[in-house]
Amino acid sequence: MLLLLILTSSFCAHVLAAATKQTCSLRPLGHGKDDTDQVEAAISKCGHFGTIAFAPGEYNITRKMTWDLVESHIDLHGYLSFIPDIEYWLDANNTYRVIFIQDQASWFVITGRDFVVDAHNTGGIDGHGQTWWSYYSDNNITREDGDGRPVSLTLFNVTRGTIRDFRIEAQPFWCNAVAESSEVLYDGMLCNATNTDPDYAGQNIVPNTDGIDTYRSDHVTMLNWDITCGDDCLAIKGNSTNILARNITCRGGNGIAFGSLGQYEQLNDIVDRVDLEDIAMIRLDPQVQPNMVSGVYFKSWDGSVHGTPPTGGGGGGGFVSNVVSRNVSLDQVTEPIHLYQTNGGQSGDLPSTLQFSNLSFIGWSGTAERDTIVDIECSPAAPCPNMLFEDVDIQPPSGEAPIYTCMNVVSQTGLPGEHATGLF
Ligand SMILES: *[C@@H]1O[C@H](CO)[C@@H](O)[C@H](O)[C@H]1NC(C)=O
Ligand SMILES: *[C@@H]1O[C@H](CO)[C@@H](O)[C@H](O)[C@H]1NC(C)=O
Ligand SMILES: *[C@@H]1O[C@H](CO)[C@@H](O)[C@H](O)[C@H]1NC(C)=O
Ligand SMILES: *[C@@H]1O[C@H](CO)[C@@H](O)[C@H](O)[C@H]1NC(C)=O
Ligand SMILES: *[C@@H]1O[C@H](CO)[C@@H](O)[C@H](O)[C@H]1NC(C)=O
Ligand SMILES: *[C@@H]1O[C@H](CO)[C@@H](O)[C@H](O)[C@H]1NC(C)=O
Ligand SMILES: *[C@@H]1O[C@H](CO)[C@@H](O)[C@H](O)[C@H]1NC(C)=O
Ligand SMILES: *[C@@H]1O[C@H](CO)[C@@H](O)[C@H](O)[C@H]1NC(C)=O
Ligand SMILES: *[C@@H]1O[C@H](CO)[C@@H](O)[C@H](O)[C@H]1NC(C)=O
Image (cartoon, rainbow, N blue to C red; front, top):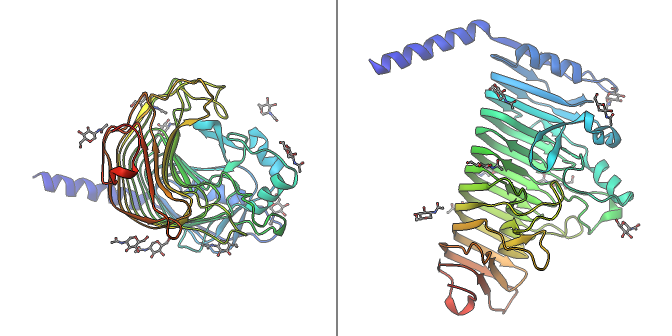
């Protein structure tokens, strides 16, 4: 009886959707033309209960754009090419501010429910980042959180959305963000922030080009990612729960971050149940990207408040727990496993009360550039219970002995005791 009911209702839903199904297709208008109008028209006609096919090529996007998608399927065979007009995008009126944390800007927001955007590995977004990176370096402009550089692809207020085989070339700033969303699947994502300006060879002029930042989101799955960046490959920020990342290649940058957390005094940041599996960190040619900092690192602001977000902050509480990293390979990483709770700190500050617990590191291999393989420095106000290390076998520079440091750790399993220091 129950089964029959389910079958009947899904049959009705199917017939209803089919009856109202709209199909749109579009192709680029060509050089010098603006595609924004035709893209918005297709989304408004077919974005609910429809399908949209973008033919290959470059779609010239000249202003901010939201796709509101409901039970729809988008085949994006080409690239949305966001004009590299920096002054234009930095005007706050020309971007959205849907990402609460650090007041980050977005030029392209996808929202809605039950959709698939499939870029077939032939399309996605062209961010023209080189123009941005060189501009900031040529003019010696300081880059700060919330300064208006736009996130390339923002998912906001999404329920059951899929992004598939999507390429983001040259993100100027964060490549992806997912905020206030649940049941999001990213299967196949390429982000590539690679400087090719010879004036800056050997420097990291692509800071803040994070692969993704997750915030206030539940059940986010990231499969088959290939991220080249100068910052966090993945950044798990406050209120990210039930996160799975599997088969992630990080080329250059800072590694996988938890944080920063505790930036907002009045908000607890909760990070719970995160699984990282089959992760590879690859150091690039230092002329292309000099940094390959961590495998996984955890950071919170300290317990005192210094200024206000987006650039200042601190004093926020919360916890990070039940994080498992499994099968992680490292290629000449500087600080493989690192935890610190002194972001934004000054001498005499209060210690952070944000607690890290139940962190597991299983099946880590590869090479490090320094002897300190594990450096876990928990806050004295929130010592860390249940740190587990299993098959962590990372080689320091040749002939040297690994160093494992644990400070304010309540209990750990798996590290040789003679190398560990601090409270147990
Ligand atoms: C994009 O459209 C603008 C007009 O809004 C035009 O000036 C510009 O040349 C176009 N860019 C490309 C690459 O076609
Ligand atoms: C942004 O738009 C608001 C409201 O339209 C306006 O008051 C403000 O002057 C604009 N700001 C800029 C920098 O153009
Ligand atoms: C760049 O700016 C910083 C301050 O923001 C200054 O210390 C530095 O000297 C400047 N460099 C150049 C080459 O002008
Ligand atoms: C989020 O989406 C729902 C519909 O799915 C809508 O009712 C709600 O207003 C949206 N919230 C925001 C903040 O946009
Ligand atoms: C990223 O872009 C650079 C420069 O265009 C290129 O050399 C490199 O192969 C690209 N990386 C990936 C993983 O596609
Ligand atoms: C891992 O992801 C890459 C794309 O980054 C893909 O080419 C490869 O097939 C994936 N491997 C597996 C085992 O799925
Ligand atoms: C996270 O969720 C908790 C409730 O579960 C809430 O109190 C807190 O303000 C949220 N934090 C953020 C950053 O939204
Ligand atoms: C470990 O991860 C790598 C990708 O980094 C993958 O090729 C390999 O199959 C994984 N090994 C196991 C045992 O899952
Ligand atoms: C940490 O793990 C233990 C044992 O599995 C569990 O009892 C505890 O609730 C976990 N802590 C948190 C904060 O989830």
